[in-house]
Image (cartoon, rainbow over all chains, first blue to last red; front, top):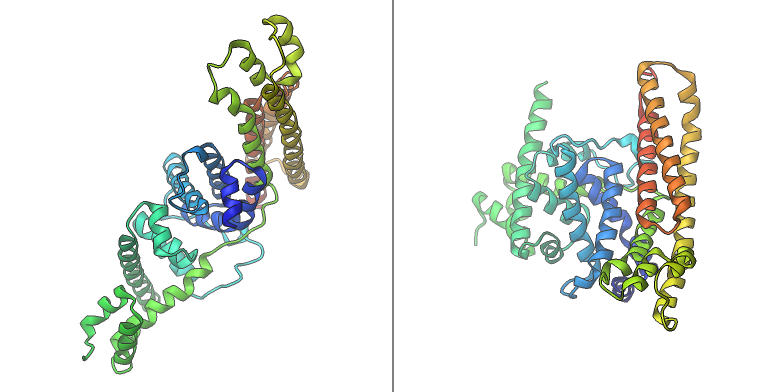
Length: 176
Length: 214
């Protein structure tokens, strides 16, 4: 994959397709959780590939091309979020949009999704990258432009905050 | 070393397996820490369920069209000052080259790099047209699916959808007409795809509307 990714940076269209085949699903998922709807998520992925193509001359090889691609994607999502004035605390993810339903469902999913929308963007993004999409802290550092240690501490803060939200939600449910 | 309740947060932050084992041992005898640890792990266990997957057969064709259009545009953009009309001719591309040839000064000999670039561009154009066709076909299929809904109701909401789709179709027709006169214009092709994208969004919104609301 690494060699095909490098070839991709050399503007080979088939390598870009390989990048898309390898990372497209994960990119769409990340963008969906950041932007809140499917159409915007697809637009962000499309835009990220175009930006990767345009900026391939600036690639210096400090990170893998795919990590670089995710960095572009995250920045694209920030830009789109600002432009389209989406409200992160009110994600519009609609389960009807997904067929089939998520393969790995969990009873806590809806609560967690709601709670995530209330986190500061940085905490939400580190959580999404680490816990949802399975990136390592070193990769997250590169994607978000933060030190690896910061990624770890932000994740801790995010999970701590989520614990609080979930506890409150459960208390409210019990009370009602 | 005895593990105390106040050590739990630090252990969770460190994520060291040894400290976590100590935390687990402590939690066996402490309800509050047990609950804290359980919820911590529950969050991690639930997180992968937020990962969403869906099929989008049109996304790669859209990206491919963008990349090829970019490739078509980029020689002119990267080399703006290169030798007068020759780079202009490269930017305007081979199909209109015959006309351009007689307007500008003729080069002394054929530049092989330029010839290669033209071939690449013609090949690229063919790829763009194939990708566009696949994308447009998928949207037209969506339009056919939405057609019965559009015809079956006459609510104000539906009328506004119809009007919007008419405007979009008019924009598509105009864009197509302009492309006919300059098939190599990557900017126009992007415009066309972006109008089709709007049509796709509108149709998807329409299909999502509550049938009762229509």
